[in-house]
Amino acid sequence: MTLKEKIISKQATIGIIGLGYVGLPLAIAFADAGLRLLDLMLMGKK
Image (cartoon, rainbow, N blue to C red; front, side, top):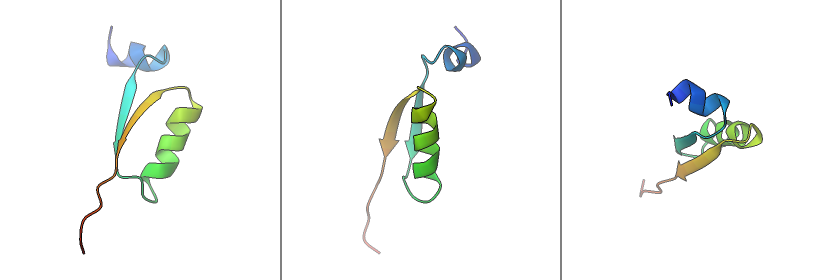
């Protein structure tokens, strides 16, 4: 099965690194579309 077919059939797992001002809305949009998500948020010292 190709990646396109997995996305269309909602069998794809999407990985998002960072849940900041871009990552969080993107994760919500993918979840609302019915896709599975893996997210990674690293917190380092500044």
